[in-house]
Length: 337
Image (tube, rainbow, N blue to C red):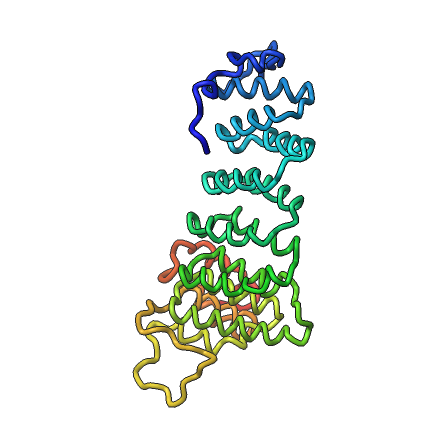
């Protein structure tokens, strides 16, 4: 953006070209209990903004005014909304507006209004392709930003174009390679695999489940104490309506104090990779998973589940002691402890 000129630093009340607008104070004839003390520049700009809204003016100078307000307060929803209405009324080139949004989105990644405005623009341009690259670049500044990931999912779902989807699995895999504990990236992978609809027919659903199970198991083996991966594993099983007990062979080694490295296994089970030698065991998430398996089995194994919950409460996960004590209490209603 250009460096502001001396004229642009002037208050609107000092500019001759704005003399025809009647500014409106935020508080008229009242004394607020908790007034907000704005800067003189912001107060002046918003006074004139209320004036042009009242007169329903939609001209190029309205775009200048709303940009000024947004730069001072990117969360000013009314300024964004009126700016969009003015853009539509003037039939402005929206590609130019998107360039401005490129700058503001990077500066204000956590401001919802920036992303909402961008959605409205792309709905008009009907050109979502460049957005994926823009989002990928934005995520380099904040790899877990909620608004950025939500916007990416909206682009994919709203336009639902095969070309947009074609490289998405590769993209999210690269994000997890950069940070395997990125919960936002795990959530996005689940969205791609299960919540976006299977595009190749029902016959591929089982293959997708197998692929995702293999993927998450490999990541757990590398970083066992990663809650995001364990949550993803549960999500797969819940989605596929698969009993947790079917994963017992994989989960159990992670719930033990020491990995079974004493004697190398005669046959390496590629479907159930063992924890890495650097793994810090036992893994809290694995102990919880095993307890859920025993609870799922019914009253016959509830005692085993209770023993694991006690170990979590007293040793491995004391921060959540009251939760584990609650689980034990609920189990005691079924079995005599």
